[in-house]
Length: 195
Image 1 (spheres, rainbow, N blue to C red):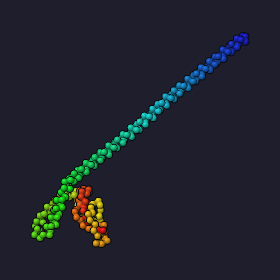
Image 2: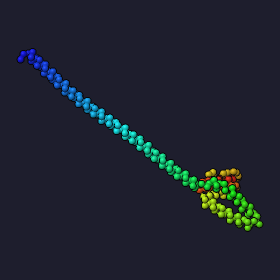
Image 3: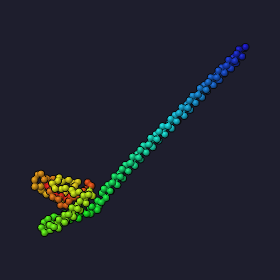
Image 4: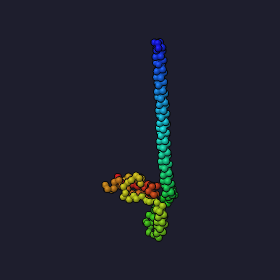
């Protein structure tokens, strides 16, 4: 073989080696690209999974809030309904209170008149029956005699000098009786308070 042939052959071998190296490099690149595509696909799926989990958490939170809100609404409605049933007659009883006051004034005036003793007995029976029915319906008179002044139950219409230190801040006189209906004040007692 001549030098030229040998050089051509070496050159062909070098070309073959270069081609083979290029093929190996291309294969490696293809494998790397395939790996990148697979990683990208994996990352995409992971991203979708994370988004789906976030959406599920958000929807679950909204659902729990709606359930709690509905439960609160249901409890509030039941409570309001119970209050309506319990105090349904409040308006009617409030309108009867002046009649009760008149009964008490009539009894006080009859007690002063000796000739009205028999009539007073009958009126007392009617009064007791009337107040008994009102008590059965939850009406209670607010006690004022010697009680500490309390703005939740009393309305001060006069402040008068207390006869002694112990009566300061206490109810000295009740001008108009106050009432509660099922522990709810429907009329404050009008009182004179010691100062």
